[in-house]
Length: 485
Picture 1 (tube, rainbow, N blue to C red):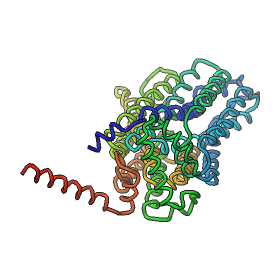
Picture 2: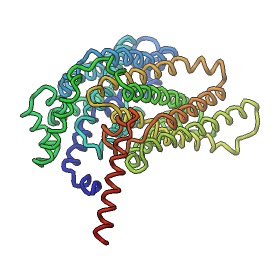
Picture 3: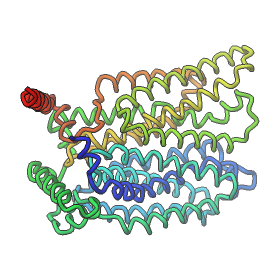
Picture 4: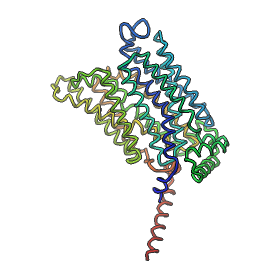
């Protein structure tokens, strides 16, 4: 009966379309992340496209470092934005750093312009993760919330792959023009999506909330009334929903445990080693004896990662979040061990030329299993395990951890190679993945097909919900048995 009602729930297609539209911002941000890889040769050319001198390797590393550092502080600044701030208004504001970043690259004459553009990209990234994760969480029904939340990873990788492909065919100037066009496309389509009904109900704008729910529920009156009553009841019961504070993240066992879970997941996501593997894509292909160009290698990896994101979106409601996370941790750990062992044998000058396919296979498998679990999983889990009143605040704290961990791994990885060697770094990342597996196995609950309230109750240690379900099942079974008798 529950499955039948779930399938008949109206508005799923509309919610999916609106989630795709808001994720155009993720595609645009992915393009911002991806343009650097194919454009580095142009920036380091003896006659660079920007500035009078070519950029050094240290300059290039700071481009990513600035993005992550500014993204960390920008995410922390989001703490001052109250929950009653309009999601659509925030989306319009987000376009400002997005467009300015591309304009700076288009008209850049000095390296400083590129650095400022990267800083604006960090602000954009912080805003995109906050907007998409919260908006999708607030417009989607429980049955498809996981699928819609996982779209952000697919959208990001789409933007990155698009930048890799176009970057190999055009100049940085034309690449920036394409990026500006993508931002304009987001603006044009964003106008047509509804405001978050959670925000409207919170602001006592009931008529507008009904209009929004009508669009989200395909005009189904009973579904709109049920959703509106549910939201109003939630806000009435949770008095802190109007002005969630940082201290609210420590108010009860469920919220504290949820915070620990998302902090651990985002830390594990960054220390799974995706940056290291992408950075050493060219070297891994060279180890295999490949003659492919660096840009072609990047395009191949980007395509594989996009495939992994697609698989994640397809499997997340079939296999569940927890299982995919565990598979991802085991897979990434194994791939790091294989790459580390291959590099170690190379250092010992063993003849392993006949096994050159192994590092490419390990790289390909790593990218897929990372995207399937650790790539999308933390964002999906984050959208499901908190009460609605603290979801935004918890998202900001979790994303701050994500940015900070990313900055640490980017700026320290070169030093780790000097200290541990390339093989030692891969073994270190394998240990991090093993720790993430234990963390997920012990602490992360399965959230597939469950209501937010049920998940929060489990984190609080309450088993009443499951007992009630079991009692209801027993009573229904007894009634059926009695009828047959």
